[in-house]
Every structure is written in structure tokens, then in C-alpha cells.
Length: 433
Image 1: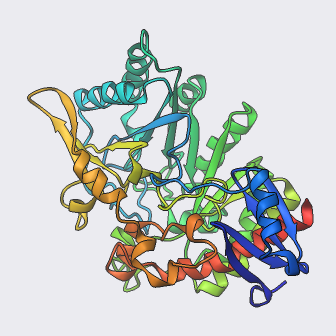
Image 2: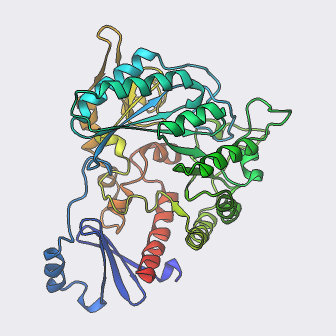
Image 3: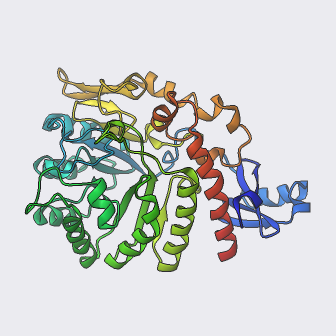
């Protein structure tokens, strides 16, 4: 079915899509999909019947991760990188700042206290965090020691990495049960074009052979990981082929997002800055990729539907305090892109810092409250009755900023993607259940 043929509604706070001659509604509260005939959709009897089943609920006011059973600490360990990706929002590699050990340890102590009786998930981000192997190893040991005698049930680890690392460090990550999100744009023609090595390896700037080695090692050891790809106007036509290529490597989880136009992406290289794909091209290639991934048994994720089962008034879980991010500068940020006070939106996202005098992390609860209390959707009339309001949450504030000049103004590109892809997903669920 073409997107123009779908009807959509907000149904008592839940997204509803008319497809296959009936309304389809998915409830994350009841964990159930229902089909409702058009003539019964607005009846009081239908509402009462669904209420009895616990079908309706209230979206989180603190971000999609607020009800999770863990607290996430993200350590942005450095500004350096061994790749020179053409779209890097952080211009990684232009400086070589590394997080101080005492800052990392203070962040762990703060998070252990805040996690209380939940699990603690410690994530490593950069730059390229695998360049800070010594620090990561120390943090892992320190975190495991720090939860002894506390209410924290377990400490888990993950890392967002470009995958260009030594075999020994990869084995360390595997041995310590890290979940790996590997930034890899797919086919060698795309990977080598968009994500070249900063320094040549054996005379070549191609990064794909090293990435293939990393992926094959993870697959051989049956270790869980995900590939995360950035889609540009150059790479969009290769999306389906990328799914097939990754499947041949043994990849089972794939996440793709359109390029964020910031940092190196807007710096002209040989006269041409990086570009987003045309929105219709992205939509059609994403739909084709979802179908192909389904045939191959590969999980595929995109922000247009990723919050379907965890509705929230905000898009990002960083705004609600369930994720604490500490930068290599020692500053505490609610956005992984805003890594220091020099960022133009720092006043809106930097909420604290490492205190050198006390050796602790200090966070302003007032600044966090301000971020939480003013949802993007409440500031845009187009969001008011949108069927996807609690799936979209107004989108990523920082992406809104880069595309509209205002973090609270919705990015119409993303809006169009959601309004096309989400009904398509509902249709697939309806046909398969």
C-alpha cells in the first residue's frame, strides 16, 4: 500500500493506522496489536473493552528510557579518532584530549549512587573510545569493585566504536561481555568513501578490510553486536545491497540513520559538503531494506519507529536523567553531540561538571528540570494531534537545531519519514500477526 492510501489517527494516546480495511492499533502497555472495524473505531464500547485489557496508559514524561531497569552512564573518553569520516559531527581527530582517570572514577561513583537498586550500564563513546584502552580497562575494574556492597544489581558495559582496533582489545571487550555498536556504513565502496582511515594502513586509507575482520571475529565467537550506518545522498542507493552484504558477514542487527549535518559534514571538501539523501529516496530505500532484512532474518532499526514500544513526550532518554553523560572535558551533558562548553547549544545541554575541589560530579537539577518541562511537541502546532506524537517526541533537539536553527522546531524531513515509515511498519505487523 502506498503511504498516500494510509489513514492515521491518535487513538487515546496511541498511534492508529487504517490499512487492509481496518484500523490497526498497537499498545505497548498491553503488549498487543488489535484490529478494529472502521464503524466501531470511535464507539464507547470499543474503548471500554480495551480499557479492561489495560490497553491504554500514559507516555513517559522523562524520555523513553525512564522506566528501564538500568541507569546508563556514558563516558565520552576522548576527542581523537583513527578514522577521518567525512560527516563526523565532532570533528574527531582534530584534537587529542583524553578524559582524566579521576573524572571517570567520579562519574562511576555518582552513577552507582543514583542507580540505587537497578543495574548500571556504562557506555563508552568518543571520538573513538578504543584509543583509550588503558582508561576503559581501569574503569571496568573500578566499576565492578564499586558496586560491591551496594544496592546495584549488576554492572554492564557497551561501546560505540568504529571497529578499527587491535585483536587483543577486541578480545578484552568480548571477555567482559561488552555490547558493541559498530559504526560501519556497509559496502566497501561506501565505507571507504565515507569512513576512510586517518592514517594509511599498508599504503591504503581503506577501512573496510579491518572492519570485516572485526565483524567476522565477533560472529565467529557468537558475540552480540550491532552495525550502525549513516545514510547520505551517496550511500542511500546502496541500502538494500548493504543489508545483503552484512548478512553474508553474519550480521543480525542493523541500525541506520540519515546524516546529521554538523561538524565535518558541513565543511566543504573539494568544494562539496556532505548532503542528506532526497527524502523520498530515503523512504523508498528504507522500506525496501526493511523488507529485505525481514527475508534474511535481520533486525533493522530506525528512529522513525524505534520508540514504538516505549512512548514518551520526549524523543531522547538523555533529557530525563536516566542517562548521565560525562565528556572528556569533565562536563556533564544530556546530549552526546554537545561534548563541551564551546558547542553553540551548550547552555541547553551542559548541566554539570566534575568538581576538582571535591573530586565529585556536580549536576544542576534545575537545568535538568527545565529541559524536561518543555517538550518540543508542545511548541509545534503540527504535533498536537499527530498520530506519532509519542513515538516521535518532536525529534532529536540537536538535529532540529542543525536543520532548522532552533532545537525546539521540528525537522520536517524527519517528520515526513515518520509519517511514511510508521504506517508501513504497522501494515507489516498487521500482515504478519
